[in-house]
Image 1: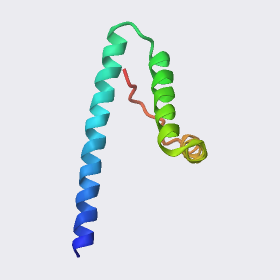
Image 2 (image 1 turned 90 degrees about the vertical axis):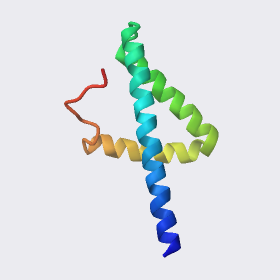
Image 3 (image 1 turned 120 degrees about the vertical axis):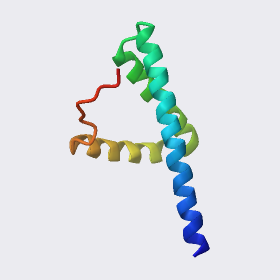
Image 4 (image 1 turned 60 degrees about the vertical axis):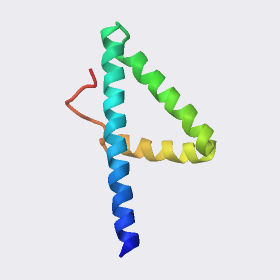
Length: 86
């Protein structure tokens, strides 16, 4: 029972951190757009920064597996949205 409660608490904390991170990214994105940086440039640098950090933390093989999963999610349309980032 205690392990389940701890797992639920950990999941809630992780969800909150993800929400705050999402808000930080949206704020940075809006700042970049308002400074005249094109969305494509912002997106490419965000991906490059994220991949560099993930490789540093987890190594190339694990990141390549992650990218394979992302490719499948793209192919299944998970990232299609009417809502743009700007």
